[in-house]
Length: 183
View: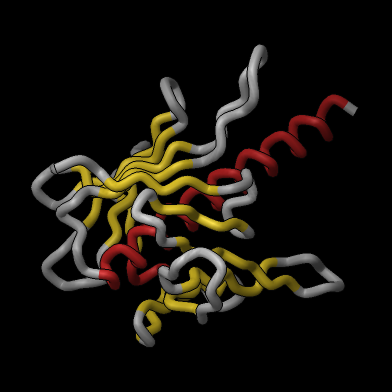
């Protein structure tokens, strides 16, 4: 059975509609503190037909460092671990029996991949890719048909949103430091 494809409607993954090929749509929205422009929370709306209202189904609370899925809140530092000094792989676990391995591949397609404990691919997220001779591609997700529980899907989407946002933050910080050194 093929993976389900989701496409973001703009490059800003924290303020975007995520369209699913089965005519459902998720919405991400982020609140910020006006004075500091720091992120407060990103909510992932429950799936819905396009054009209808919905409330948040899952939340990343950036200020408090938590994920909320189906009304349960957990600290991110309890959900995510890193093993090994030089490894970029992260291990995420919400459920006691399940652990996801999350890896970013920049060399080929700028893709995040989430693997199940047994090594099968559960999801991929390809970030926006800049092209010289045609339009840039928008971020997209592919979710395995084995992900059938809505709470698991929401957790996977939060992992991908969080991981890509933190990667972009680190990249921007690195560019700012390098720019400061040249001045």
